[in-house]
Length: 525
Image (cartoon, rainbow, N blue to C red):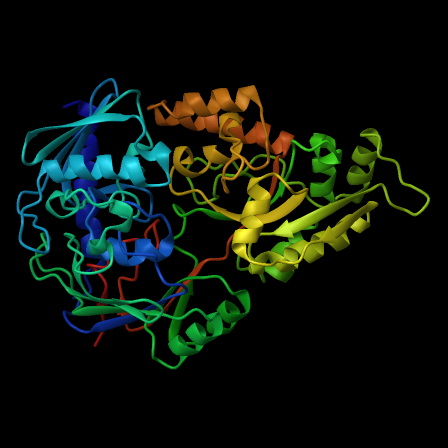
């Protein structure tokens, strides 16, 4: 064990003690927490399904090797310790020895190996575990992940949202893990809660796992996830006391109203790893004006980001200047954010050879939007660009599948979109800018058709760099180049907020939001 790793373990242990002490306002055992989800999960197994509505109940049902606190520090969970080899080519996990699945079967390193293989083969985020070539299981409580290259993103990938440990004795029966019946009925995990009932479009009900491997937890008797698709109904529910907790709320008028309620706490903490951003994407591979970065820069200068932040987002969102979320330690704020400047916009358009015609128009573009919440931005963009001679037609939103099919096949000029970081850039950021990820028909790939060899080099280098300072330097250059090339104009974080009754203790405010185990959450008397 290296001295650096020994020091890290000591610091981790101390931070855990401090965190427990700081939150130990004598948590009370018992009670039912009633919360809500905005849509029905496809199922409850995050090993083979991405998304926050699977992640929230999934994090309660399945334990993961690691958990994360509010400052991006990994904490022990199903793995009591973890250690990199000196060359960064292996990761050794030591599992807690008394952990059992909900059916009483002990958790072993074989389950870890099986889970990694299942995730590799079935989860949509292939970059999370693609460098893992095999998992050795020298004893029941030791799993050694062997890598083809150093993979610093691995630690974040071992979070509940991304790496639930699933039971081999259940899922190793030869059935397709994506459609396995135990994903939704009689789910067996090892998390702090067990499944009682999953009724699509109604609720997910969980109860305390009395055999949870962390002594004294969880505190709650039950969690009820009510499925309430209407944002106003969710707001009314928590205001009148029918709900105790809301997460991933982003309807700004409701958030602003709830901020005035003295019985509620409203916060944007807890979403840094999810890393959701709003941006205007350009089809840089088109034959038209958007192939020229000067035109893309002009469009950015013509859009008043301050209006978006203050009027549309009502000061409930953060400025975002790059594709890395501002809450990430890798974010670089010292890049050009394209503050409103119509003179610069017009000059760039003139320089690019697009002169104003007799009718006051330089050229025409279309704009789509992938989510109804970005309709105001699309309409504002049309008005903003008319001031510099660009005629914009806003295409009406039909439904998500129609939009996704159109954008993924590069049949667009511009589109407003909402995209997640998913913790590490290797997992959720690289996909947008990698030239080898221009994949027709695949949404949230490099649908901009952007290609820059230096960007590809930087992503390849940062993806294997285990020195934190050197890695950040690579991502600084990465963000500086992208801010110049502007395949995407990033404007703001999605205004996700957590709203909870003041009777809720230890709400889920870590970097993964509600995709965090609720074993420490309790209800005050």
